[in-house]
Image (cartoon, rainbow, N blue to C red):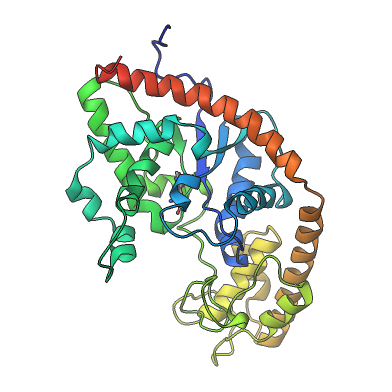
Length: 347
Ligand code: TRP
């Protein structure tokens, strides 16, 4: 068997993202993470490979909510329903179907230190107050580094909560390169990623009732969150009852007016309009009811279109995309893994 000399098999650079599957997604997750990724892919897939994968091995660090296979297919359908333009540069795959991820993770485990993993805030949060924590939760960021480094991914759009993991991937890559020469491409730093994505920082859609907090699936109050499966009319009502403030000014000020700012943000995202344009449109207006009515109508139209499109996408279509994507992913990942194994004397 010949091992490729080149560790840089791509003729085109790669944008990579892993979307954790959820049985249900909030409008906040969708607008904050998935939709920007779709728009990024549509804008750049002529010059970049765009790897969209399901980190199913990451999912099993905790109890699965629902059926993993069903959830996974549904999440990938969301990308298509959100308007992802498919082309041969877009690759869908499941982490567990590309064994090189697990294998590189082990090798990276022998380079990463307990100290640096102990500092990860996600690990600290997830393990806090528990007397027994599985090793997968601790090792999560190392597997994530493998996900990224196997493909020499340059851009890895993630939310702020994942910046620390991205930094770890960069650090591990540097450590490898220092020891073995140019083995891995370093993913761009979070601030450069944000520039590339055309956002200041991660977008965070807020809880409609408590806009100081992020919109979350686990919030008990149904009025706090909009789910992608919500009836569009019911979703509109939730917007109408959103908490605002008593300042009587429509302006974007997340600190003093998080409720109003959240509505402006939602309006911009569902209509694919720059936030600045929406802010200018409403500048000088004082009637919160008018803004709510407009956003409620936008959200309801958006959900209606989205749900209609979603219903037309079959499981078979997604499974076909996965089959093709996994052939591609295995070819790229195995080549990189072989180079790493060779560097370590394993080959
Ligand atoms: N940890 C990411 C999240 O929770 C998901 C993920 C796993 C990921 N591997 C990745 C994201 C690699 C980007 C690149 O959202």
